[in-house]
Length: 144
Image (cartoon, rainbow, N blue to C red; front, side):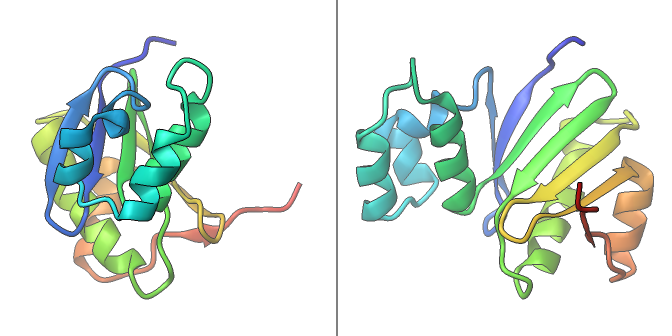
């Protein structure tokens, strides 16, 4: 499976940053300011090493409010961390960003809210239609 571009999305502002590796971006002080990370988040990141702590760095970025997007050929993996009242706004921000990031390309999306473990597996077109109609997208993941 080929790995395509990755992105960090700030759902509050709609800003998007293209990245080759998600764990490097949040470690840069200028990027931390751009993402409006709190002092606590900056402190937590300062204790991590990009060479050995890639997963914790990515999780902190998502828990700090960013949306992580990674292209795997025709499948997009999208992770965020939001309480129920913020989910519709986060999903709207994703729905607005995707067509701009991948013009004319239909993807299969795997969305995962790390806060409550809800998820969705859906095409870009179906996702955008549901979000625009104000309908529910995320579902509780089946227990294994």
